[in-house]
Image (tube, rainbow, N blue to C red):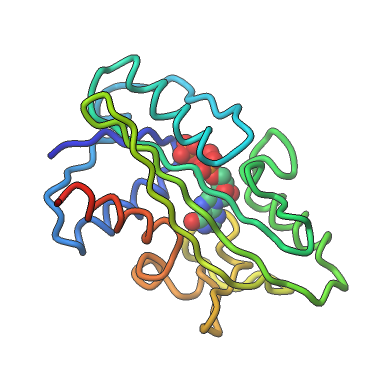
Length: 193
Ligand code: ITT
């Protein structure tokens, strides 16, 4: 089965492809560049679910093919759930991972409650019907960056039960326990039933 992935984030695309490869799934992911779709995918909703649906629906309306989108965010308890749905442009519209990390670390300076979680919502449009799949991983925000793998906030997020950040653990481990990996597992199990 072929599904177009409505994302402009190359890291997400790679993560999901790897997860499907290791799950021996028969789902083949088609990227936006493979179908020559270069337009922006708006995400103006106030929740991950709204944004995931908005991205998937924008694409579906244009190409009429089965597709899905992923909207993800980091929620930090001591910052009342920030950056949350604003994770991509927390430090401004220029969407710099470096600046976002810097802003989180400076807001967290001197705060001892460092609990946080990553959440993913996948919206799948299959034969015109909408389905949602969610994934979550709990952890904590480190006091400085560690590691070079991954993207976004990975260098400052240490999942519960590990002494390394996602950026140190690497993709295979992140995909086993992470928010996106868990949501993709649910998607795969839905599609195989
Ligand atoms: P698309 O909407 O094109 O898929 P995006 O980068 O805008 O790509 P999101 O809105 O879902 O994707 O993600 C918001 C931001 O949250 C993202 O830019 C990262 O900064 C952060 N983020 C999401 N997933 C992450 C992950 O697995 N690890 C670290 N940071 C992540």
